Length: 361
Image (cartoon, rainbow, N blue to C red; front, side):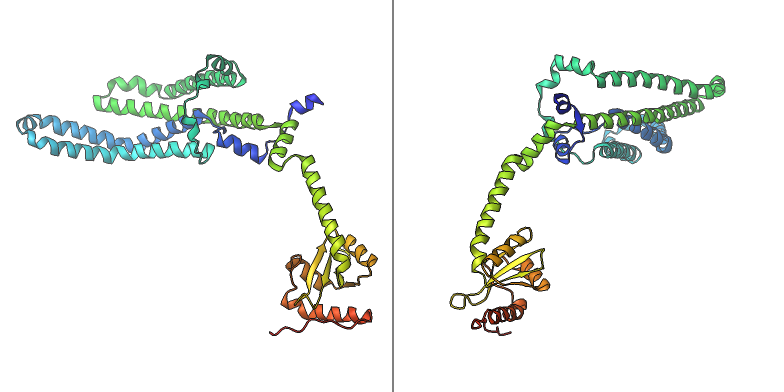
């Protein structure tokens, strides 16, 4: 039994998940974000990097040729620097903006919108050497070390494969001119980065899946934790049961007092019961003095024991039960039906009918 209470055999409750999220404890893989950024950066450089290279090349050629004029006319320097910054912004800012957007989107994909300002506060436990060693020699540390070694092998294998596929071009690159060789070298480097990034994304997805699994395992709850959570959220079950028992006793005492004074009990026929009372000298309108579903049989028995007429009227019982609170008058739309029912009850008992006067509409 003790072992069962100590084992995490229950799935995490929504409350436990919310508490963990508020503390910033979510499944997250740093490798996935880095790998996706690497792939996107390589793709952006392959697609938009040519414009940046052409702009920088033309800029160097133009301004190196204009150095004597700039030196002789310093007042033009501000204009030239403004043009340079504007031109660089057009070719570089789109790349940087898309990279930043991709980084934010990658984090949101993993964790959703998460705001945990408490994580920014200094925490001495993070620099505790003992806890640091425990993290290193834990299951997560071992898995991270294994993934690190595996990533190094993947990078080496992909690099060798890409370079081998371009071996003939690499061997003939010595015959290229300077500009052609720079273009060929940039193409090889970007292609290598792209393929390495794609391989790392695949590995990072496996790491993310492991982090999700481990996060779920860490959130699982023991039987004792489930009981403690229910006690904190709903109160002690024993106290709750005792409170409900007291409330039931109060209700029973109330109907034991009010039902014998009622003029009629309307039923449906066994699902619910509504007790009506009308005292012309005190009340302008009949009122509901007792009603119930689970207590309908108790109300019926009290009525029969005290010679209170019990009349089956399904639609009227349902209407009064749903729309009228205890000690409140009946609604206008049920007034005629209740008056007719009271008249019938009084006549059956041989009493002088004491029917409430009709209301003006």
